[in-house]
Image (tube, rainbow, N blue to C red; front, top):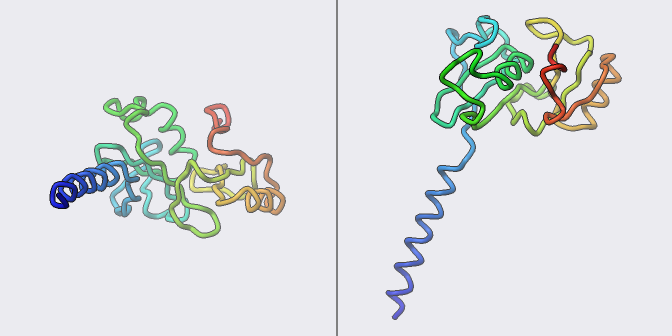
Amino acid sequence: MKKRCILPLCIAGILLTASLSFGADKKPVEVKKTDKCQVCGMFVAKYKEWVAQIIFADGTYAVFDGPKDMLRFYFNPQKYNPAKKQSDIQMLYVTEYYSTKLMDARKLFYVSGSNVTGPMGAELVPLESEQKAKEFLKDHNGKKVLKFSEITVEVLD
């Protein structure tokens, strides 16, 4: 009797583990010296403190020299790569300003209009918490703190 119960439980456990691993977030990629920003064409590796990445469901990726270029691609991927659609995007990563670690772009806060510039000039500065974003805004003459969901094409212009 026990053998009959154990086999279905083992199979269920294997299937659950497999489904969780397929749905797991894809990790950031290691940026190569030859990687270019998909929007402006600049070599990205020189700007490690500003690197942003899009990881696609098929395992391919695109790297950018800052959050604004990544977001330009995000809002209109077919303009920069006709083979990609927004629904192909699995993960978005940006480099958090203070820690310089790549983090999930959708979970961060962004300061617009500050006196801190990126490789392409005016930049959205990604920060880990709303509190840090508010402090940054005050310390660097920023104009506004935005959640990822509040960023629009108009904000990028």
